[in-house]
Amino acid sequence: MIENKQIAIKDYSSEFFINRIKNKEPFSYSRFNDGELLCTIKTINNNEVRHDYNCDGHNYLPQMGEELMSSLKNSNCDNYFIQYLDTWLNDKKFIEYTELLYDKSILLGVYQYSDFLQFMLRNEPDTFIEFVNILNKNKFMVVGPNYLKKIKFLKYSYFVEVPLKNCYNDKKNILKTIKENINDNLIILFSSSMATNVFIDELHKEYGGKIFLIDVGSLWDIFFYKSNPEIKQRSPNLNKLDKFIGWYKEFFNYG
Image (tube, rainbow, N blue to C red; front, side):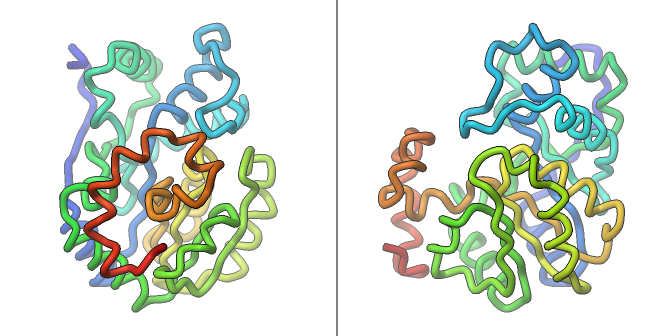
């Protein structure tokens, strides 16, 4: 555990988030995982992190690190949820970095403990299917790389394509395109690596409480990673999820 650190944590269930979507109660949700953490730590102390990029090949950029740090202060678990800790809580280095952020008065918000999206995918197939069905009954936007267009079971209204790597560098144009298509209660699903947290934080300042801003990350990759060599190469552990995707084949008819 993280000793002597009073970090405010909530742990809302997947049902809680699904009901908010069904009831049109907009919220923002982003996930602060190892890449975001390492980018932040590298910004604080360049020598602390050996690599200059994350597992997907996105560079740890100093300005992005600054904006990631800033976003952490805004999570309130009211209409803005940043998921933090969870499976990394037993990692010694992760705990050390978390204590550093705490001591620097960066972890000032209230944080969601578990990732409700991955939890649904792996443990609650009926709820996950309900989530997809709810999306398809509403107007929603996908913000992500081109290969996500291959997911036929997602009936999105808008698709904002981002570069496969270092999409933070195209932040201005990406945000401009998103804003051109925003309307009340729109659901926006982001798959844009570490830049997602920055995009959501900036959009929340202007649209928080009016639209849904949801960081889904690589949630969809397991449905077609076998037919996409690049995904398989950068995420070799996806084959461990084969037992989960069997649950969904009948419902989503993916290849």
